[in-house]
Amino acid sequence: MEMMTISSRDGMLEEREAIPEDGVDTPCLYPEAQKEPARRPHQFDESKKVVIFTARVHPGETPGSHVLNGALDLITDLKSEQGRLLRKHYVFKIIPTLNPDGVARGYYRLDSLGQNLNRFYNDPDRRDQPTIWAAKRAVAQYATQYKNLEAYIDFHAHASKKGVFMFGNALPDNDRQADNITFAKLVAMNCLNFDMNECNFSEKIMSIKDKNGMSRDGSSRVALQKATGLTYCYTLECNYHNGKRINTLAPKLMKAQGHIEEDTAVTDPNSKIYANTNSPPFTQEIFEDVGNAVAIAFLDHIGVNPVSRIPLSCYRTVENVRDDIMNNLAKYSAGQVNVCGVNHFSSSNTKVSKNYQKAEAPFLKKEARGKHSHSGSKDP
Ligand SMILES: [Zn+2]
Image (cartoon, rainbow, N blue to C red; front, top):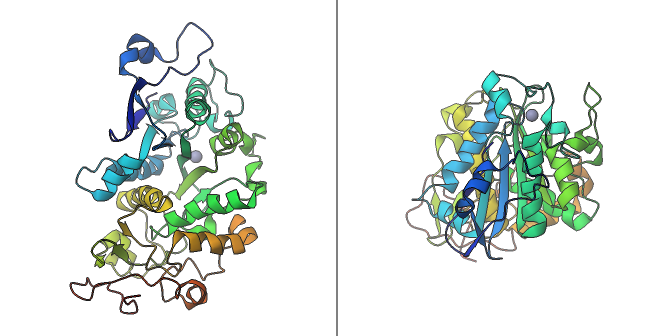
């Protein structure tokens, strides 16, 4: 199993990361690290936060890899300002395949010992679930030793539940629960196909048992949250075929220029992809757009997105997004978010905008507008 590190040199320290505590001498689970300790990833100062993405714990969940690829496309894009800022502010740790034996054998859900590895995160065995054991050690190292872990997302696919959505945790502290749900909403506000209404952040879903009696409290999202206290800890699920509905996206505001950046076919609800359907059949392009939106959400999350949809949404600011979630916390936790219509984020959503829209109308230059120019906005 491999773990990649992607970042910029900003905030990079001379020191290399320690090999995660193994506890046993042989056989070492980090053979390359032991052989060449000088090639361990560099540590970073406190200006940078670590984001961990994992995929394919269920080996047949190919859409999860497409989503991860979409995130990687932006994170590694050397020409994009968004890519540069992602690398400047975050260190991405990517485990693309948590169940390599299962993938190699063409399995759907289990590993070569017949185990659903996503039920062993509470107490993984070093010999029987070595990848889970090692992944948990790595996550714990960033959370407790380096104290810079910001988020963990495990990418999956879903065979029955429609749409693209997240399962999160129910955090007992209301402020942290609002933060937790706000990040998911930022993904939705950047992605036509991500369905906030199908998300779930309730206590109930954390301990649900599957048909073999294995509880989800052994899943990565639940167990790693418990082990680390992490606020932003999710499973991202994509149905294998389609969803129930699409979002309304606000235009992308190029903040420095005051212009609108045009949408592409996959982010434009008027493109032929979305003609005559409530939700199109998912494609590689759509899955990759989900990953792209996850990466962009990390920029909105810390307020550094140079091309953001938030200023022209009905909420205007991320703080207002969070405020709306805080005011409707029980509904959001249970995935009942029709409080603002069905995921309607456009500034024409008067139901929400009457609360927030007047507050801060962003500056828009009059010339050189794209076709999605927003006639309602003016100089504040
Ligand atoms: Zn899965």
